[in-house]
Structure formats: C-alpha cells, structure tokens
Image 1 (cartoon, rainbow, N blue to C red):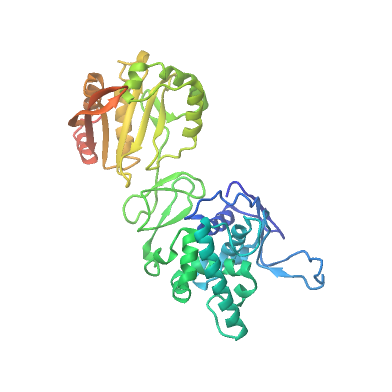
Image 2: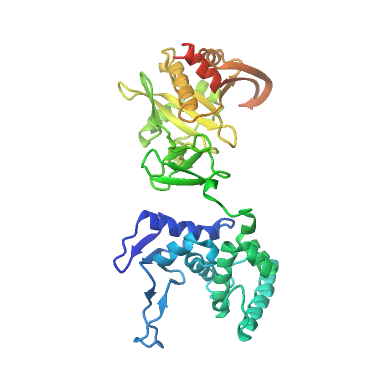
Length: 441
C-alpha cells in the first residue's frame, strides 16, 4: 500500500481508508503464492464512479467506453471507488472489480495477454492449458446456445477476461465454483496456493466478531473471534493493540518506552551504535547471553533490522536500550521474546555494562520487565535462564521474585563448551499475590 502512488480523479480525494480497502482486496490474490506486492503496478488511480477511457484509434469519440476498472500492462490500475467499496462489502454478489483488474496484472506479468499467468513448471502448464481451454470452450457453447452459465457471458469475451472473471468467482463464491467447475477450481487453487472453500464453514454473524476501539487513535476495529490473536496492529496508526478477554470494548495500549525511577527502557536508535560497539567488547556479558561478537558493519545491519521490528510480535525478539534518565548514558540492554504461539509466555535477558554493575540497575530492570510483561502484555508466565555457574545472574532473578524451576545438565554448547542451564519462572498470579502482600516493589 505504501509503495504505490495513489491518485484521485474527478475531484475524489484518496483517503487511507480507500487505500486499505483496495489493498486488502488485491492482497487476496497473493495470499498463497510467492510475490513482490505487484511491483509492476506503479500507481492506482481511483475515480468516484465509473469512468470514460480515452478513445482508441477505432473508437467513435461521441460514444466513449465506460469502465468500472481498467488495468494497463506494467502500468496503472484504474478503479471506480463506488464499485470497489460496494463489491468489497458484498462478496456474495460474485463480482469484484479489484480482484478482476489485479488478476489481469498477474496475467500480464509474462508479457502476454492470453489468460495464462506464470505457472510453475511444465506439468502445471499443460494441466492449465487443458482445463482452461476446455472450460472456455464450454462457456462459449453455453453462450451460443443462450444457456445460463455460472461464470457469465463476459467471461466468454476472450481468455484474458475468462481468467479474471474466474478469479473473482474463485475467491468470492468458492463452494459454488467448485460444484460447477471442479477441475477449473482445482487448477486455480493450485495456482493461487489457497482453497477459499475451506475458509469459512458457515455464514458469519455479527456475534462472530469482536469490536474494539484502538487506544492510540480511537479507530473502531473488528476482529474475528476465532482468528483474532492477542496482539493486533491498528491499520490506521500501526500501533499494537492488546485484546483482553473475549469481548473487549477498548484494546489495551502497549506502553513503550518503560520508565523506572532511574532508567528508561526504549527501542534502539542509530545513536546507540558506539554503545553497542562497547557491548561487543564485553566478552563475559556476551558469553552469558550466548551471543557472538559483532563487527561494526554487522552492528549497523542489526540496528537497521531491529528498527523494522514492531513489538509485540510472537515470532520476533525486541531489544531495548537501558538508559539512565539523568544523563542518557547507555547502561546496557534487555531483550524480550514470546516463548509460545499464543504469546502468553515471555522470556527476557538483561545485560548491564561492567562499569554500571553493582548499582542495582539489573534488579530495577528485571522488576520493570516483570511489571510490563504481566501488566501491559498480560502474559501468563515470565521466564529467564542462565549458566548454572553464573551466581550473579541467579541471585539477581531470585531477588526479583522468580523461582528456580530446574537445572538442565550440559544441555547447550557455548563457544565449544557444554554448559548446564538454570531455568527460572514467575506466574502472573504469583506476581500479583506478592504485590498484594507488599513483597513486590
């Protein structure tokens, strides 16, 4: 969405909602296949309603052709916003101008406009030609004999339109499509890499959705109960939203940075480069984290990659700089990562630079991470681990409230040496009970 040039014509002002509506429908075609986000489409042009195309050399300018959508090979896609919105809201109608025009773009990718996009390998190519040719011929016969067809007369215009119309029906009416044209459906399913007939077992009702308000921008959001993950990204402001309970009214905002009495835990920024170079000189600390030292160019790459990570995500670690609030000195770093698919268990690591140790910073960071994990992230369990021989780390996490769960003997190799691991954990109920009893600070 962000990579395309969006233009409005005939007085239409393109909004973020329009961009998202069109992009979401076009993305359906790419869900199951390798792709480059329609890189061959540089721009998307929206009209308020159907529009007249410039007359061709054989067209009578007095009678312009009226379109709801138009795709140019390796060029722009033109769409009527009225139809894009209405058809996006009514998949049961079996028509979708966005899917239709972007299917044309898939067809155009090999340089030929013949209703046959790039397919994988000789076997699939032969199967495609056999099934598509037979289905197109059958449709032409139905049209010639004035018989009603599932795909409709327009699909019989030529193989290019046949492919685009078939793509519409494939995504919008998959069960009916499979009943009328089982072989054609299987060919399209193999090409697109998805089987829409299995997406929904029954018609959705309002009760199947949870409606929440984004705490950052106030947007109204809806998510399917059966597929909604605990953390969602608001499509308007891109901030993370935590869904608490089965029917949350307002999502919880993830507070970042994390503030303590003396410290600020924040995301990395380019100014941390020199401090991270110092971290890479702390051989003892790196060994405790089971990290390898990085060269300067590797640190730059790391900073660039870390900047692209949005937290929370269940499959990504996030690194936080530990900064003193009095003078913005870089004290160390912490990492957070979910341990499970449901994002209900959180693991952390902490590294304090040697010159800042024995000042209570490590304890302050761990307590802040526990409060953040059980509060903002609403996790069930927080864990940490260290070398059995690392007494300083053991003392730190137990003082912060975690309990020893066990020791694994010689379970991992660090720098060519087998070491044993001590594992620690704390449950949310334990954290809250200690806090209620006045034991948590």
